Amino acid sequence: MKSQAASSSSCEWPSGDPLMIDYHDREWGNPVHDDRKHFEFILLDCFQAGLSWRTVLHKRENFRKAFDQFDFRKIAGYGQVKKDALLQDAGIIRNKAKINASILNASLFLEIRKEFGSFDAYIWQFTGGRTIHNKWKRLGDIPVTSKESDAMSRDLIRRGFKFVGSTICYSYMQAAGMVNDHMVHCFRHQEVKRKNEK
Image 1 (cartoon, rainbow, N blue to C red):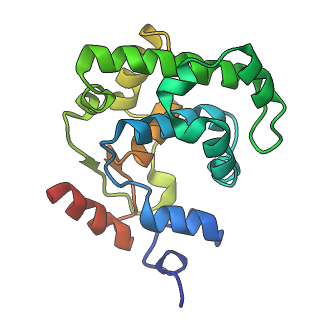
Image 2 (cartoon, rainbow, N blue to C red):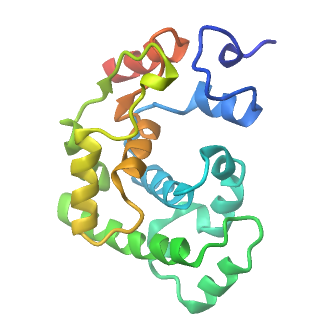
């Protein structure tokens, strides 16, 4: 059976990679309202900095295992022994600064939950609690930042988060469905809109 993402009625960026196609078809752009899922994307986007999403996606399940299923409570408590183990784990991206940043970000994530009740309540304020549905016709039209990602980045940096520049924040917004950046001709563009209407 031919994947819809391989056809002309889809975004072009999966480029024939089965894992990327599956991610595009089932996940990218779906509105996220679960805090553990939010943290998963924060952690993965931290490691993506300077790399391709394809690289990170192909190591995603290794990250899931290495970082306790993205349990931010456990990650916030990681000590030196766990840090050393992560640096020796060939299945993930062994970058000391990004490992340390992910542990710090988990602690700050918990602080936001205490302040707002959930990270979800905090993060969606940057788009007014709704998905921004864009109408891009070409891949090259999609921006790498927006005024919303700029504001998100500034606030996260103010709170002490690391690896949260505006470009990373915009990528996060795309993944978490805060913006719908599927091409207008893509079958997923309308699917995501319908998910928001439920």
